[in-house]
Length: 500
Image (tube, rainbow, N blue to C red):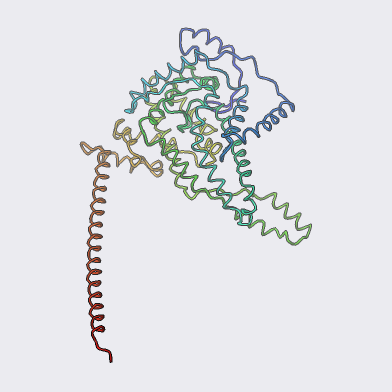
C-alpha cells in the first residue's frame, strides 16, 4: 500500500528506471542517490516467527530488568530492543554515494538559505543516517522528554489510589515500578521503531531531537517517498535538506528555543493528574452488593460499554498550548524561508510544500509523535497560519526585522496572533519606525533598572531594620537600668529600715 506525497506508508518495490538513473548519474553526486533494487521482500514468517520473536522478548526481560538501563521509570534497554526489531529488514546501510549526495544537498541548500534569512548557517556537520542511526542519535533527547512524563505518571497513579490500596502495594512497590518501566519501554520501543522507519531528517517533526551540531538526512527513507512524487529525486533531496538546514539555524542561533521546547514538556509532566472519579461513580451505580446474579450480569454488560480508562490531564495545561505555538512558529518560519530560498530556483517547491502538508496531516506530525512517544496529546500546530504570519511580517518590515523576533521569547507571536496577526504586525511596524531601536538593549536596560530599584529597596529595608533594632536596644537598656535602679533602691530601703 502506498500513500501519495510525503505520507508514511510506502511500497518497497524499486523499478528499472531507478537503476537507469543510477547509471546515468555516475558523474553527478545526486545521480547516485537511489540505492539499487533489492532482492525482494521476505515472505510471511508465520506462527513460528511470531513465537520466536515472543520468546526472544521474554528471554531478554530478565537482563533488561537488572541492567542500569532497565532501572527507573522507563526500561530503555527494552525500548531499544523492540525498536530494532521493528526495523528488521527495513534498515540498510549508507553507501558512499548517499553520503556525497547528502553533503552536496546541504551545501547547496545553505547557499540558497543565505539569501532568505539573516540567521547564519549552523555550522553543523551534514551526515547520512540509517533508521538505526536515527534511533541511537535521537534517543538521548527522547529520554529527556519521556523520563519526566513517566516519573510523574507513576506518582499520579499512586496518588489516585485509596490509602488502603497504597499501603497494600507498599511491599511490592519496587516490583511494580519495574513492571511499569517495562510497560513504558515496550510502548516507547514500538513508537520509536515506527518513527525511525519514517523519519526523513534528524528533526523533521520540528523537534530538536538530533544531536547538536548534526544536520542528518535519511537517504533510504527519502528515496522511498521520492518514488511517489512526480519530482526529480535531486530536487526532493535538496528540498528536505533545506528544511533541515533551516531548522538547525534556528536551533543553533536561538539559544533559548531548544530549552523552551523541552521545558514545556517537563512542566506539563510535573502537573500530571489522573482522574478515576468516573470509574468509581460507575462502580457505585452497578449495585454489585445485591448478590443478584441477574443484576451482576447486567452490570458486567454495562461495564463492557463504558470507557474505564483513567482521564489524564495536567494542572499545567498552558505548557501544552505553548508547545503547540512554538512548534507552529518553527515549522511556519522554516516553510516560509525555504519557499523564499527555493521558489524561483526550483519550480517544484510549491508541489513539495503541499506534499509536506499532506504528510503532516496523515501522520508525519509533531503532535502524533508526542502522543506516541512522550504521551502528550495536543492539537495540530497551526503551521499554515504561522507561515502566513511570517510572510506578512516579512512584507511589512523586511527579513531582518522578521528574524529579529526570535531574539527573545517575549517578542514571539502568541497563539492568538496566529488566528489574528494584525495586532502583532502593527507592533512590528511601530518598533521598526523607531530609529536605532534595539529590543535586546531595551530589555537589558529594563532589567538593569529593575535590579537597581530592587537593590535600593533592599538597602532602605536594611536601614529601617537597623534603626528599629537600635531603638529597641535603647529601650531595653533604659528599662533595664530603671528596673535595676528601682530594685536596688528598694532593696537598700528595705535593708536600712529597722525591724519593728
